[in-house]
Length: 558
Image 1 (tube, helix red, strand yellow):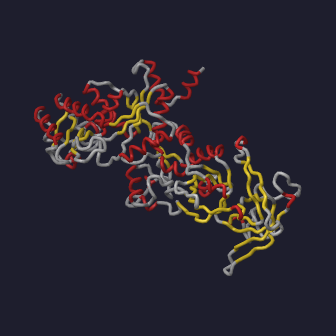
Image 2 (cartoon, helix red, strand yellow):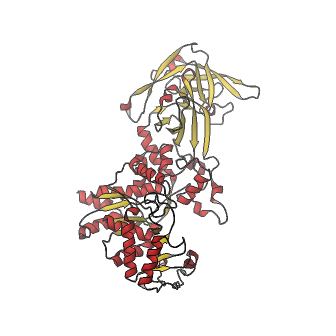
Image 3 (tube, rainbow, N blue to C red):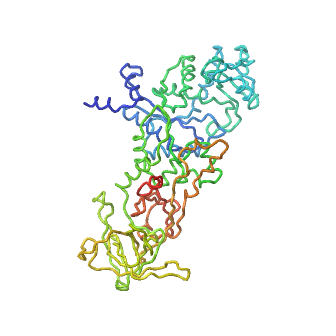
């Protein structure tokens, strides 16, 4: 029975693994790896890859390595290494081994010399521009380098002198000798090593030549005994080179498999563009809650469970497509609906005085912590003569179908009483500053004997128990879903949503929220789900909107 269920639910990668297990290709081993370059913060696309690689290892009782592809010292930093470790653990995974491509620099160098001795690699004196110009096009063969037929002895001498630091950056590279007329551009004598005189965060100044990703990646997989090297779809055309290098060296051969990368609507996933947003101060940093970085999603209030659920729902595809961000928002709503305690917060307060409620009297009302989880019990909500409601919950001249408070109208205060608006107080400019209402004592929630029927229910905060907070209302970072559709010549940054962040400085909260710890998650009733920001202080808490209660964009689109 279990085998049948497994067969029916497998994706195409699992089908490949199952066929390998049946044939005994890897002795029924499954060993994956997650190999980020430590040159930026991880984003939701990496989260999909993390869930896939670690998930496969768990499903097949195998192993998954964390390997840092640290082959470009000019862009890499320990800060990124630490953030990647933190993100993987936060998502709920633990690696079986932690490695760095730099662990293998000596072995990789030896293999490069081995290729030279086989006549399969040569030192080229052409500049990067000259190499690019002679590579040809997909329909026109490339031109062989004038240095392609150097002797083995000369190539070994030059390569060793490159390693010794005798030559300037850009003056020489090591190239594979394959086929300049190959229909696959990546097989036209690709560069294997380049000179980079930059300090490396682990090896210091020991090396001044560094392997290219295509050279280091497959060989690192081989060293670690990886069985299934899972990459995104753009590496499909790199696979022949992956296989060629391993076969020429006669070493253990993993299987590279490609899947569609995650593209999310209304945001950017390119590390280069994310870096531009951070360095250009368009956002507050790598953990800005508008960014699709894992640290940004965490600060916004996304949970590991919601992100894992999202990765599971989008599945593993063979074709690139854009995923609607509404699916990610659905996953966090579903998670927080079950787990987030409820509280009442008024963003834009309007004072209400209940004129027939005794002055100086207060009472404690009972409210559920989370109706989805009765075991979380109830909480006490203070009530008194003066309260705050949302400015939007009152209208002097309401349109048809408006069920909130109006002059002479009645609404229920959640967990409390039905009130009726009797007087509207305005300032000299005609702005409403206060409402005077009466309440009906027999209409108390849970024991209502008033017989009154009202259609509107409002949230509120008691004035005597209110504290102030800053609330940051985050929205989608861009105004269009697919930035690849921007007309040529237009700057993608022109499509940043000017309303992607609205700061509400003087929201009224229940005083109990002054104790909210950084990272704690809440449902502000009727408003959405919110997360306590690290900027919070005991004097002034700060909350970030994770997501609204409903998909407001879908409504706006119609």
